[in-house]
Length: 89
Image 1: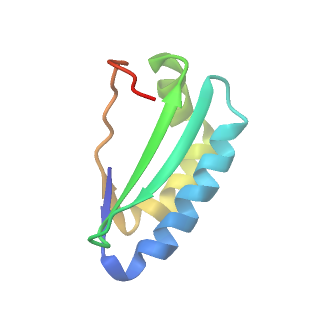
Image 2 (image 1 turned 120 degrees about the horizontal axis):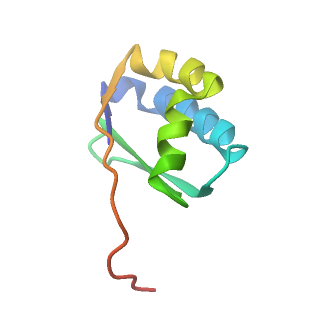
């Protein structure tokens, strides 16, 4: 979950969209979905990866590190790694 000033939510979504496009070319990505917080101050980036190791490798990839710089200049985030539970479709 990312947190930032509501006035910058659109800019923030653009940066995260670019970041997800970079991740698209990296191993292990299954899907990524951005969610805009109705409060204007949060954005969820729900990413599904084949394994936690893929996420860890992604966080060290030079292109990802570079794309995170402008995001972290005005936002904070708290990553949550989760295991699958029940699936409802």
